[in-house]
Length: 166
Image (cartoon, rainbow, N blue to C red):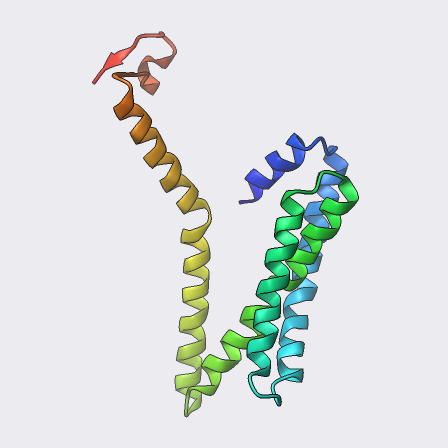
């Protein structure tokens, strides 16, 4: 997803220094945000559904900040909304999902299995819901476009300019 964001930043007219600054600070925001989400989840754990409310706040703030980031045109607003998104995006897993899964286990070995399975599920979903979904949608649209037109240019005949009939 990062390469698409770099293209978006460049399309919006940001300089390379501004793009590097945004990339650098978003990593810092995410690094600070995830432990902050865990702290907030532990802080509000004594309330009924306190962890769930922290996770819900993360989703709502993350959705709003990412939406405002997408429609921002000035560097300062892009910088603020993008970093705010990365600051609150990690709260859900740190504040709610991992502790709730850890509380479901009765002994330490079950707890380790549940938390490791959750981490595996989290990483696999990130893997398949970002770049691979973009690849699948691109491939499906190219397949639809190829079916709509009767000729395509294949990579081997691209440089010679020959059209290949299907």
